[in-house]
Image 1: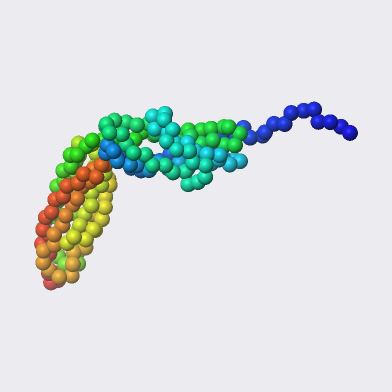
Image 2: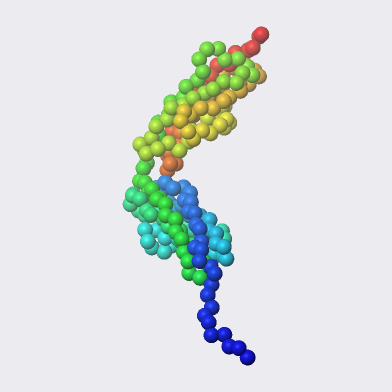
Length: 196
């Protein structure tokens, strides 16, 4: 009977792929953020390890590959890494930066209402200019206390359809920065009856 004298080998020469997301990617000192990795391999992912500045935070052996991280007590940048391993030892990593801020300064925001006469059942555009010492995350627009629209890109604006009855509507723009500080500006919009 013939005897096998060769060596076994694996055909798996491909490393896994991994993509890391951090939400939020800007946090205040001492606050938490969520780390999520998407990992794939042609024969299967064995585990995903999460690191902060090289220190192991957590190993996850089955999806979803998620870990929590508490930001340090000092501001700065933390390198967050997700490393995926397959069953034969191949690995791949993705590293992203987490910004840790001690920012307690709120943004500034100025609301601009449309000029001219505004009538009932009319769609108008309201705008806001916003700035922050770090960055503006988004601006929310409200009419009579109800959220109308959220805009996260400059220029910040929203479309609003006036009510069916004439009167005054309180329009508010609230700006948020990346760490949750906020500021608002409110103005009254006069709505006239459309007699046409």
